[in-house]
Amino acid sequence: MKVLKGLAEYLDLSLGDLLEGIVLHAFEQKLPFDDATIATVERLKTVYGLDLTAADSHHLREADEKGAMFDDRRRV
Image 1: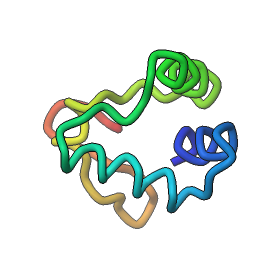
Image 2: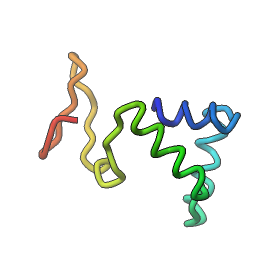
Image 3: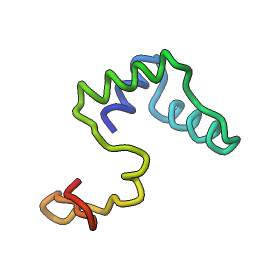
Image 4: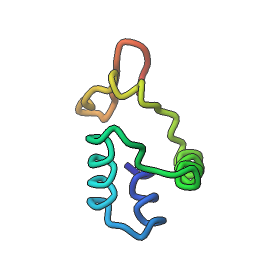
């Protein structure tokens, strides 16, 4: 979520507007970002320590009462 918030701030959009744009592009099977924005996303991922990929989204689970999230392969 930090990367999305950072990107929204960078693009001078609300988080809701950014998400809406991403979803509308996805519904039309179009890429939501150009190469320059992808480079910004990569920098933000580094800053915030995000190492998850799209493939990881299929393995994410709700956090337990201590905030830990687990799947079959690794702690997330």
